Length: 210
Image (cartoon, rainbow, N blue to C red; front, side, top):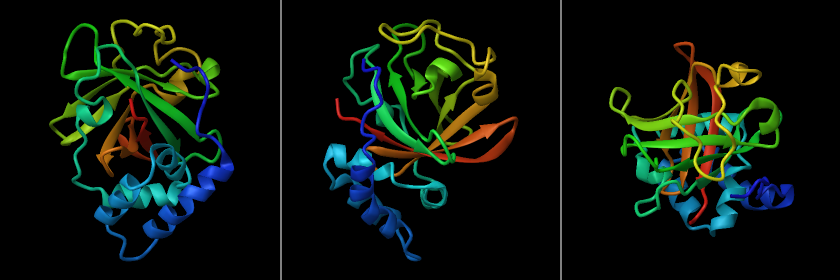
């Protein structure tokens, strides 16, 4: 598993993302058109493109995607071996250090209807890996990325398991759930829910092909 951030070229991000952002900012933008545009791109172009979307764009995308359900299979495609990490390259709405990844896998033990995962970014050594358990939440009809729960162990080749209440991790991950909505087959949009409140923080993810 790579320990480097990839698809971070500012030139390519702008080149492939400008058209997507323009389409999203149209007053009559429709999510089906946005989804078709994204899926028509090449795999690497798609990752660069979604990383061009800023906070206002992500908020609008979240609103356009209301009711579009994300399943476990969107994050870890059917047939993926247990324990194999699937990388989702993302950008959040924070003003700095906004590029990151979420990495998901099928559990090697325990509940098969859940996913294990963690966050990866350039500051991971400082902030911690931010491990989570993800599942399809019936109450919200959404995929929940739950930082209140940790996998029983770190998957092979991944960072050591660390509680989200320890060190600087507690300021980021403690008590948080990310809820996901579907943009396209490869792309999802998320919003943070923390301390029983929706947060004004969004992020977009693009799954890397296996």
